[in-house]
Amino acid sequence: MPPRITNPVTWQQAELLMQPAFIRVVDNIRKHLDTSTWKGTYHDVLIWPASTTDEIKALVTQLLQEMETATSEQADAIRETLADLPTPHPGYHLRLQRQQQHVSIDLWELCYQVCFLDYTPENEAANIDTSLIDEVGEVDWQRLEDKTKNLVRQAFANLPND
Image (tube, rainbow, N blue to C red; front, side, top):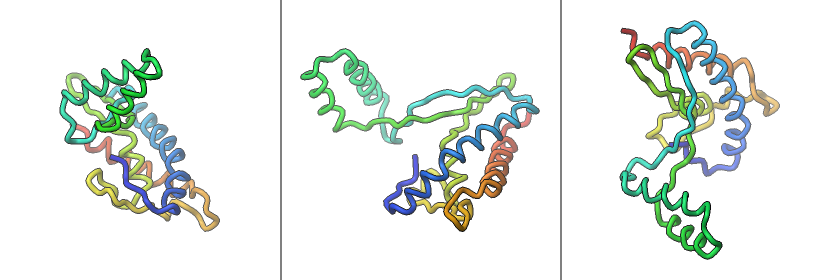
């Protein structure tokens, strides 16, 4: 889950860092894949709240599909129903495969690890890594690259090696 940000300054800092972090993550992954025995493909996914049952996921998916062809009155009723149900947020995963082994890496989670200090999915209150922002409030590209390179290297180092 994304970090919960309530402070407007932290929000601005996250907006400043997330896109450059994502670009650096994808580029560093590409560099690793160029020399790896793993093959990777990128996939859009839906990330549901942890307590969401398969039945609720199916219902929400069905309602979203029905919304595409609904009349305005039907769409209003569907929106009312959806307002009381958990909704997924979009995610982006790298699926790695080597022989019969399969691993999925959540790219947004990796970006959150780059942009926030000591980020974990369980820690909703995360703090921006302000060392990635220089004294004039711009992205410190070298620090961003170094941290990203290190985190991507760790992700590949933690892959099964048999």
